[in-house]
Structures are given as C-alpha cells and as structure tokens.
Length: 418
View (cartoon, rainbow, N blue to C red):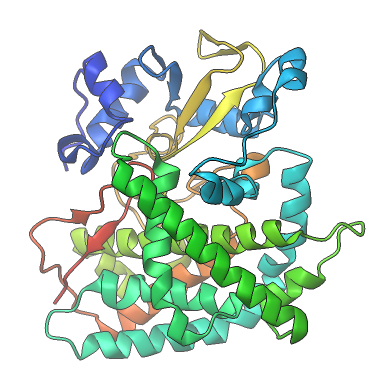
C-alpha cells in the first residue's frame, strides 16, 4: 500500500474538505501520514477551520466539554441571548426539523436527555435478545449470495443485513425497507456537506426529508393505537423524569437510527472484508482461529474506519498542539488519521486481526461515543462468521475498490467476489 508521506500544498489540504476527489480520497493515508508527521494541528484559512489528526489530540477534543456541537453554544453569552429564533419558513425547513432534533448534533442537556431515552434499546441485554435473529438474517443472505456466480458482497450482504436489522428494530414492514436505501444515502450526503451540494441535491434532500417524516409520522400514529414489541413502541412509552420524546424528536431519532445504524455498519462489514481479502494470510488466520473474529472487527474499524471525521466547535479560546484555537472556530477531528497514529498503534499501517491493545476511535469518544456501537460490533461479528462459513475460499473479483464518493463515510458501493 502506498502510505508513504509526501508534502501537501495548502490548496490540496483545503480541497480535501470539498467535493470528493478520487485521487486523494480513494486512498487518504498518505495525506493522513503527512498531517500526523508535519501538521497535526493545522489551520485552514479558506474554511476558518482547524484540522486535528493525532490520536491524543483527537481524543482530547472529543472528550473535552469545551468543544461543542451547537453553534449557539460556541458564542459568547451575550451573543447567545441576542440570537434570533431560527426561521421556520425556508425551503430547507423539513431537513432542519430533523437535524435539529438529532442527539448527534446536540449538546447537554438536550443530548443527555435524548440519549438517556434511547439508550435502553442498546444495552447488552437488548443485544443478546437480537443475536439469534441477526444470525438468521445473516445466514439467509449468505446462502442467497452463495448461489450467485460473481456475488456483490456489498449489495447482496453488507447493505441488506443492517437495514433489515434496524427496520425490524423500528417495526418497519418488510415491503417498505427498499425505500430506506435512497433516504439513508441522501442523509449521509447531507451530513457530509462539502462542495457538491447542488440545487438538484437540495431538492432531493428536502423531498427525502418530507417523505421520511411522513412515513414515520404514520408509523408512530399506528403504534400509539396498537403498540408492538418494537423500538418505536418502546420510545413512545419511554419516560425520563416524566420527560418523554416529542413526536418530532421521535421522528428525528428514527431517522438518525436509520442513517447512523445503517451507513456505518455497511461500511464496517464491507471495509473489514476488503482488508481481509487484501491480506489473505489474515483471512486464513481467521479461518483457523474463529475466536479472533471480535478482534478482527475491531481491527477493521481501526484500519478502514467507517466514519473518517467529525467536527466540534471551540466554546472558548483553546490551546492545542502549540496552537490557539479561537472561540467559535470549527475543529475537524480526523478519526481515520488518529486510528493510524504510530504514537498510539505499533505498525499502524499493518492490518493485524490479533492487534492488542486496540483502543481505536472509530466510534469516537466522550459524551458522543456511538450509542449503537454494541449493535454494530454484534452485526460485524455475525457477518464475518457467516462469510467464513459460506466462503472459506473467497477472493476479490474487482481490480480496485469501488469507493463511494463521500468524504465523511468511507465505504464501497460494490465489491464483487468469487
């Protein structure tokens, strides 16, 4: 792999955070090595944004409550008080109504409240109840995939597995699941931002927000009348100091669970399988010793992180890595780079399914540590188990990975195997 560091011009660094660029984004690791070695805390004037890449610094930003998610919380107190209410009469309103209620994008106390109401669905006991059903789904998909001449591991297995799981958790009927694909991809692009947000995509985004809001509003209305054993019914009944989710919060939470629970897990499964197939000695090692499957999932998360970056805002002037980040400035923390930091991981560019310790940041850290991490890990372990069982001689059929064009989420659109 070409992971050697080279010098990057400021224009190249700035362009990293714009539209997808095949030359730099398909293999980001030379860029990450450059940041780690030369500019671990770098200011980009063009974006008024800091880029932080080293593990220690990334972990610090993620855990320090002085770095926030909401714009208003990064402003001086007098400016917060002067902020006018957000307009509700804009074309983007259906999208904002969802994003404004995502716990992922909120700070305490709202984040704490929303997370507390949802967290009981992701406890170890809850995961244990899901395990057998996920195994059955994975087995069925793997059996179907084995009947294909040159199966596409992404479209035949990695994509449908998590969408079926999250749909069943939410109580979505099987006939409605296909609609989730376009909605999920659209919101993944909304989260990405960047320079390819065309008028056509804006229209597509608003349409998706309107459609998915109407869909879940209807489903919620059904559950109010006839509760079932699903997450929506549980969330309708959830109480946290008598403070239940509002309908808009519940709709937004369902959308977040769909996007976060689907996009990242597809990438986890696909990226880990790609790494295993690119390192056949590791695949053989896993076949010989399946007890390494949990460790292989963790290494897949580190080596090809499903989410490459996340952002925070400085709520005060802050010293980091010998630099001063000013209040209100955006800090882009590079999870994919931190997970290749040689100061934290020995031989970080090697894929080693037995790596220990492996305290990667693929699920972030701090207050916003991924709530669905137990489910993603469980799905990843079950997925690898099914692939090893049904495809012990699996090989890549594609000459090169078909990376989806998204700078935030790292994953493939297709991956043909034989």
